[in-house]
Length: 182
Image (cartoon, rainbow, N blue to C red; front, top):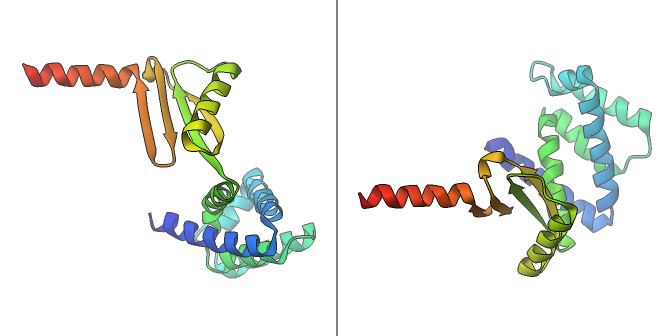
Protein backbone atom coordinates (compact mmCIF):
# COMPACT_ATOMS: atom_id res chain seq x y z
CA UNK A 1 0.00 0.00 0.00
CA UNK A 2 2.82 2.39 0.87
CA UNK A 3 4.60 1.57 -2.38
CA UNK A 4 1.40 2.20 -4.38
CA UNK A 5 1.01 5.62 -2.74
CA UNK A 6 4.66 6.43 -3.44
CA UNK A 7 4.29 5.34 -7.07
CA UNK A 8 1.26 7.61 -7.46
CA UNK A 9 3.19 10.58 -6.03
CA UNK A 10 6.13 9.98 -8.37
CA UNK A 11 3.74 9.59 -11.32
CA UNK A 12 1.91 12.81 -10.46
CA UNK A 13 5.19 14.73 -10.32
CA UNK A 14 6.37 13.12 -13.56
CA UNK A 15 3.07 14.00 -15.23
CA UNK A 16 3.18 17.63 -14.10
CA UNK A 17 6.75 18.15 -15.28
CA UNK A 18 6.20 16.29 -18.57
CA UNK A 19 2.95 18.12 -19.30
CA UNK A 20 4.54 21.49 -18.55
CA UNK A 21 7.38 20.70 -20.95
CA UNK A 22 5.07 19.18 -23.59
CA UNK A 23 6.88 15.84 -23.44
CA UNK A 24 4.14 13.43 -22.33
CA UNK A 25 4.55 11.03 -25.28
CA UNK A 26 8.34 11.16 -25.18
CA UNK A 27 8.50 10.43 -21.45
CA UNK A 28 6.03 7.57 -21.83
CA UNK A 29 8.10 6.10 -24.66
CA UNK A 30 11.43 6.44 -22.81
CA UNK A 31 10.23 5.10 -19.47
CA UNK A 32 8.41 2.23 -21.24
CA UNK A 33 11.61 1.35 -23.07
CA UNK A 34 13.56 1.28 -19.79
CA UNK A 35 10.94 -0.95 -18.14
CA UNK A 36 11.04 -3.28 -21.16
CA UNK A 37 14.84 -3.36 -20.99
CA UNK A 38 14.80 -4.36 -17.33
CA UNK A 39 12.03 -6.93 -17.92
CA UNK A 40 13.85 -8.36 -20.93
CA UNK A 41 17.12 -8.97 -19.10
CA UNK A 42 16.59 -10.97 -15.89
CA UNK A 43 20.14 -10.44 -14.61
CA UNK A 44 19.79 -6.69 -15.02
CA UNK A 45 16.42 -6.77 -13.27
CA UNK A 46 17.84 -8.78 -10.39
CA UNK A 47 20.67 -6.33 -9.85
CA UNK A 48 18.51 -3.19 -10.14
CA UNK A 49 15.56 -4.47 -8.12
CA UNK A 50 17.41 -6.41 -5.44
CA UNK A 51 17.25 -4.58 -2.09
CA UNK A 52 20.59 -6.13 -1.09
CA UNK A 53 22.39 -4.16 -3.82
CA UNK A 54 23.22 -0.66 -2.53
CA UNK A 55 21.75 2.36 -4.33
CA UNK A 56 25.15 3.67 -5.48
CA UNK A 57 25.88 0.80 -7.88
CA UNK A 58 22.27 0.88 -9.09
CA UNK A 59 22.63 4.54 -9.95
CA UNK A 60 25.88 3.82 -11.77
CA UNK A 61 24.22 1.06 -13.84
CA UNK A 62 21.23 3.28 -14.68
CA UNK A 63 23.51 6.16 -15.66
CA UNK A 64 25.63 3.86 -17.83
CA UNK A 65 22.54 2.45 -19.56
CA UNK A 66 21.13 5.90 -20.22
CA UNK A 67 24.48 7.22 -21.47
CA UNK A 68 24.90 4.23 -23.77
CA UNK A 69 21.42 4.61 -25.27
CA UNK A 70 21.67 8.41 -25.44
CA UNK A 71 19.03 10.88 -26.46
CA UNK A 72 16.89 10.67 -23.32
CA UNK A 73 15.09 13.70 -22.01
CA UNK A 74 16.41 15.36 -18.90
CA UNK A 75 13.16 14.46 -17.13
CA UNK A 76 13.60 10.74 -17.83
CA UNK A 77 17.23 10.81 -16.71
CA UNK A 78 16.32 12.63 -13.49
CA UNK A 79 13.47 10.24 -12.73
CA UNK A 80 15.48 7.07 -13.26
CA UNK A 81 18.55 8.26 -11.38
CA UNK A 82 16.38 9.53 -8.51
CA UNK A 83 14.61 6.18 -8.27
CA UNK A 84 17.97 4.38 -8.33
CA UNK A 85 19.38 6.66 -5.60
CA UNK A 86 16.35 6.08 -3.40
CA UNK A 87 16.25 2.34 -4.16
CA UNK A 88 12.76 2.73 -5.67
CA UNK A 89 13.27 1.28 -9.17
CA UNK A 90 10.84 -1.50 -8.27
CA UNK A 91 8.09 1.15 -8.37
CA UNK A 92 8.73 1.94 -12.03
CA UNK A 93 5.96 -0.26 -13.54
CA UNK A 94 3.39 1.21 -11.12
CA UNK A 95 4.66 4.73 -11.79
CA UNK A 96 4.30 4.16 -15.52
CA UNK A 97 0.77 2.76 -15.11
CA UNK A 98 -0.33 5.73 -12.98
CA UNK A 99 1.37 8.19 -15.34
CA UNK A 100 -0.46 6.67 -18.31
CA UNK A 101 -3.73 6.91 -16.41
CA UNK A 102 -3.17 10.63 -15.89
CA UNK A 103 -2.30 11.13 -19.55
CA UNK A 104 -5.46 9.29 -20.56
CA UNK A 105 -7.50 11.43 -18.18
CA UNK A 106 -6.02 14.57 -19.74
CA UNK A 107 -6.93 13.28 -23.18
CA UNK A 108 -10.48 12.43 -22.08
CA UNK A 109 -9.95 8.70 -22.37
CA UNK A 110 -11.37 6.28 -19.82
CA UNK A 111 -10.04 2.80 -19.19
CA UNK A 112 -12.54 -0.03 -18.89
CA UNK A 113 -12.19 -3.75 -18.33
CA UNK A 114 -14.92 -6.13 -19.50
CA UNK A 115 -14.91 -9.76 -18.41
CA UNK A 116 -17.09 -12.40 -20.04
CA UNK A 117 -17.35 -16.20 -19.91
CA UNK A 118 -16.23 -16.56 -23.53
CA UNK A 119 -14.15 -14.31 -25.77
CA UNK A 120 -16.01 -11.37 -27.30
CA UNK A 121 -16.20 -10.98 -31.04
CA UNK A 122 -14.67 -7.76 -32.33
CA UNK A 123 -18.15 -6.50 -33.28
CA UNK A 124 -19.54 -7.12 -29.80
CA UNK A 125 -16.46 -5.54 -28.17
CA UNK A 126 -16.95 -2.47 -30.36
CA UNK A 127 -20.65 -2.26 -29.39
CA UNK A 128 -19.74 -2.42 -25.70
CA UNK A 129 -17.00 0.16 -26.25
CA UNK A 130 -19.49 2.55 -27.88
CA UNK A 131 -22.05 2.03 -25.10
CA UNK A 132 -19.44 2.74 -22.44
CA UNK A 133 -18.25 5.83 -24.32
CA UNK A 134 -21.83 7.11 -24.44
CA UNK A 135 -22.38 6.34 -20.75
CA UNK A 136 -19.13 7.97 -19.57
CA UNK A 137 -18.88 10.79 -22.08
CA UNK A 138 -15.28 9.80 -22.77
CA UNK A 139 -13.42 7.84 -25.36
CA UNK A 140 -12.92 4.37 -23.85
CA UNK A 141 -9.82 2.21 -23.93
CA UNK A 142 -11.44 -1.23 -23.62
CA UNK A 143 -9.60 -4.22 -22.25
CA UNK A 144 -11.39 -7.56 -22.49
CA UNK A 145 -10.87 -10.67 -20.43
CA UNK A 146 -12.30 -14.16 -20.16
CA UNK A 147 -13.33 -15.84 -16.91
CA UNK A 148 -15.45 -19.00 -17.26
CA UNK A 149 -16.74 -18.59 -13.68
CA UNK A 150 -18.81 -15.62 -14.92
CA UNK A 151 -21.02 -18.28 -16.63
CA UNK A 152 -22.68 -15.63 -18.82
CA UNK A 153 -23.32 -11.90 -18.94
CA UNK A 154 -20.72 -9.20 -18.45
CA UNK A 155 -18.68 -7.78 -15.58
CA UNK A 156 -17.53 -4.23 -16.34
CA UNK A 157 -15.00 -2.23 -14.35
CA UNK A 158 -14.26 1.44 -14.92
CA UNK A 159 -11.81 2.76 -12.36
CA UNK A 160 -12.95 1.52 -8.96
CA UNK A 161 -16.58 1.04 -10.03
CA UNK A 162 -17.71 -2.48 -10.95
CA UNK A 163 -21.01 -3.37 -12.63
CA UNK A 164 -21.58 -7.10 -12.24
CA UNK A 165 -24.19 -8.29 -14.70
CA UNK A 166 -22.95 -11.86 -14.67
CA UNK A 167 -25.15 -14.91 -14.36
CA UNK A 168 -22.90 -16.10 -11.53
CA UNK A 169 -23.73 -12.95 -9.54
CA UNK A 170 -27.46 -13.30 -10.23
CA UNK A 171 -27.34 -16.93 -9.08
CA UNK A 172 -25.51 -15.89 -5.92
CA UNK A 173 -28.21 -13.30 -5.17
CA UNK A 174 -30.95 -15.86 -5.70
CA UNK A 175 -29.12 -18.32 -3.44
CA UNK A 176 -28.83 -15.65 -0.77
CA UNK A 177 -32.54 -14.75 -1.07
CA UNK A 178 -33.64 -18.37 -0.79
CA UNK A 179 -31.41 -19.04 2.20
CA UNK A 180 -32.55 -15.88 4.01
CA UNK A 181 -36.25 -16.70 3.44
CA UNK A 182 -36.03 -20.19 4.91
